[in-house]
Image (tube, rainbow, N blue to C red; front, side, top):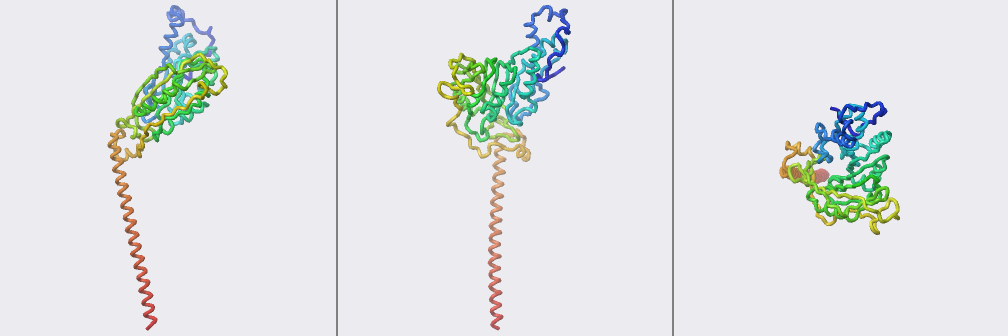
Length: 390
């Protein structure tokens, strides 16, 4: 079986008249091209390669992203005629994924804008310009909020996506480690211009299940206040959208720490995701300055979840090495891990008290020694005086 990454496919390097017409096959002599295209799409659909599952203790393993995606390209090896008709389908049908994150928050192998541009140029040479069905972007907020890195992707030549989904994960929010309330700067909303091919822009807002109300709050603000724009100035609105809700559970371990503050079970976190869809509307304002989006008379608002209680846990996470050194299983019950922490804390406190007592004893010994030294000195002076009188 031939497996291939969708961004390594090459256009046919042979002339169309060099390919056999294959009229002896009902695929070409009976079925119309539209039906063949459906067959090709089904046969060349990508899938998760479960022989290379991602580590559970990562922030990028999640539903539908359990492993790298591959395509079985055996069909393309059967004959030149099929290859000419279908060589680009593994690429256009596959979800094209970008990670605008630091290295530890993305899989080892990912598609870069340069990889994508190379494939787009390869397709353009065949004078075939198909629409990409779905593009997914996973951005940390530092890489999203000013819009520049996202716009680099949107400005790729011959880039015609139909749907773009931007997923903001729990660990992408600012200061999630300290349990800050959710905040998202909206500069990118007005800065970014999306391809004219776009029919849906989806933004998935994710956090912990216990922060569901915060997610619902920022989603409401985004639906009411955010309007995106394509390069042809067509606006996209979400005012009539009904958010899609998804819940899932994953590992509480990431970056060699287990986040016991947020656990809902042994080494388990529960997540809440609300996805909003923006769709094109007829623009009524053609006088807006480029690069600035105005909703009514104001700029797109930042999203802020205000007034929600934060958890001030003195020990939000525990190093995995701490659990291993205690000969506990990595998925030991949360209560057991906290009990161990308490015991270690008590032992350290006892050690501190012991050290203080030893310091006090040493101090008292030093004082006694000092007093003895002073007494000996006085005795020596007294003896000197006695000796002098004799």
